[in-house]
Amino acid sequence: MNPKSFTVIELIIVIVVLIIVGISVTLLWSGHSLKLDVQALKLTHDIRYTQTLAMANNSVYRIVFNQAQHNYQITDSQGNLVYHPSIDALATIFFGSALTYASIQPSVSYLSFNGKGEPYIYSSCLQKLSTTLQIHITNGSQTKTIQVFPNTGYVTIAIS
Image 1 (cartoon, rainbow, N blue to C red):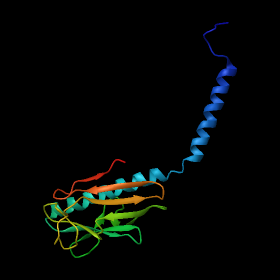
Image 2 (image 1 turned 135 degrees about the horizontal axis):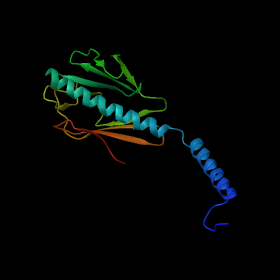
Image 3 (image 1 turned 180 degrees about the vertical axis):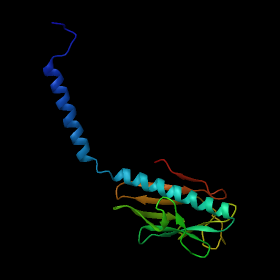
Image 4 (image 1 turned 120 degrees about the horizontal axis):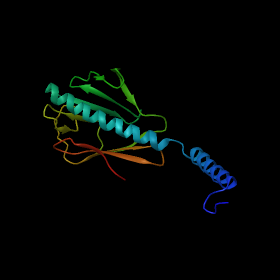
């Protein structure tokens, strides 16, 4: 018998332990953090898409946040819904179940972009974004923060 090899019993015990650990991790992980990550990434892309529309069409486009209903819309300067490519329709984008706005700071209902891609905090582009806009999305126990920077409109998900 070779002293450097494993017995069949030892291999079976290791496999059983790995299966038990795998099942435990699967049952404990609810997937909420994945939903939160996906929604934060989707909102980040939608903000970039809105800015790109504004620059491409040299017009005002905006995201309208509805904190009470936990959704947002992309609209043109007249308030008309804009085609959303990932949904393939004119649509309101709702957060997934258990996800909500924790807060938007400064407190705004609009994030508008002019034809140069500059961010504004009112629908009519009267007041430029002067501080970093922070949009906090939560699933109750975890929070993701999307940041929109003044002047450039650069969008990122803050690392926490």
